[in-house]
Length: 233
Image (cartoon, rainbow, N blue to C red; front, side, top):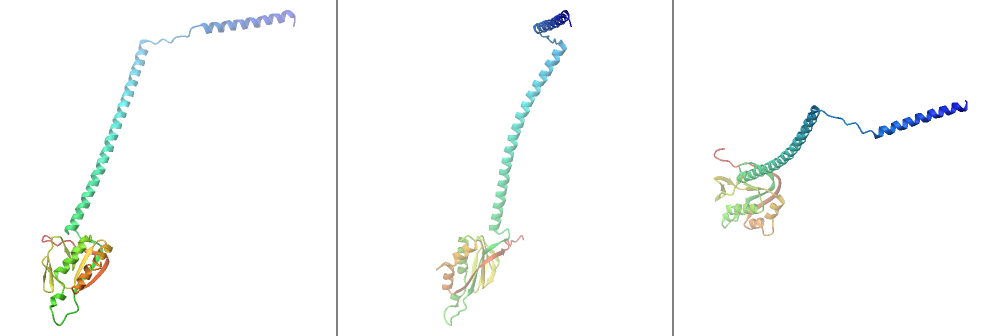
């Protein structure tokens, strides 16, 4: 290629480069085009913004209502739990009172103490001194109740705080029902405590034996007692 041809090509390249540089410079100086919105578009934009604000406000209100309802439910659950506990306590108390009043049958561990007239009968002297009397039965019952007996029976008949015992010769009457010796007194409760309270040195058993009463004391795994018999039943 001749010297003139190379010069022409170089000039053409330089001219093109200058043109591109100048065009780019003009483009960078030009201000950015602004997007113009008409009235309808502005109204729509405003409407959507207002709707969004309303939704956000409503969401906030719903969150507050949800928080309040949760608190109410928690308080209701707490009160319900307390009410259920109160009802349970009342039921337990009612059953305990019914047991004490003899309205319900009762069973459990305990002790039995059997009182018999003395096998020894002297040829002379008062034979009544060798027989079981109501005072002996009262002595045993009072000791059992003091030791925490929950229920007591005499020959299978329930004994209560308002029961009465009388003695006529060899027969003992409990609430109008006659019982002959031997007298089996049963008590439901802590059998170890009940047994120990009767078997103390110079305690009830020793006192009964000193008054010529034959005594047999045993622990029981389970004693069953019937409910009070009433005129209605």
